[in-house]
Image (tube, rainbow, N blue to C red; front, side, top):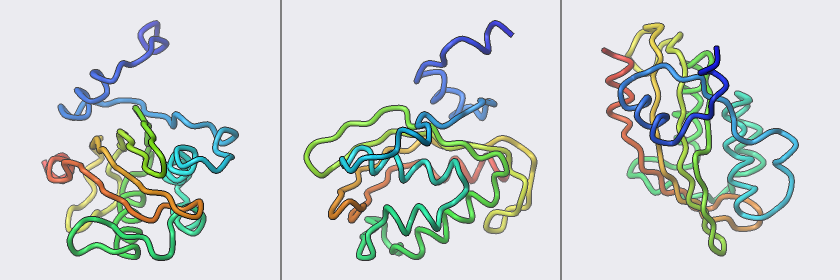
Length: 164
């Protein structure tokens, strides 16, 4: 039990995520800390919506109607649909913001998302295994909402964890 009370370093989290280890991830942002309108707080509050399994409310509040997802083939709606599928497939989904830097209207965030695969995701039946991935995103905030989103994640490794 003593090991459970020790802080988990970034290397341990990323290493565990890469090796498929089981990590108890919890939100780094308490609900009371998501007020305010700085770009950094807006992006943190957006990620809190994943932990709360309430993406639609999070999208309505924090994603600009004209948001651009800088991934070929994705727009605001397809981004929401894909992430909703992830949330639905990972029953105990948790997201942790590992680090965040802001300059002007841009916010860079390193985070890890994980949970146990308990429902079908895309064509992959539920396995019960823990799966996770780490991502770095850059978001630009305009009018108190995210207007541009540049993600960088090894989603292929996440899919391999689910299908293994």
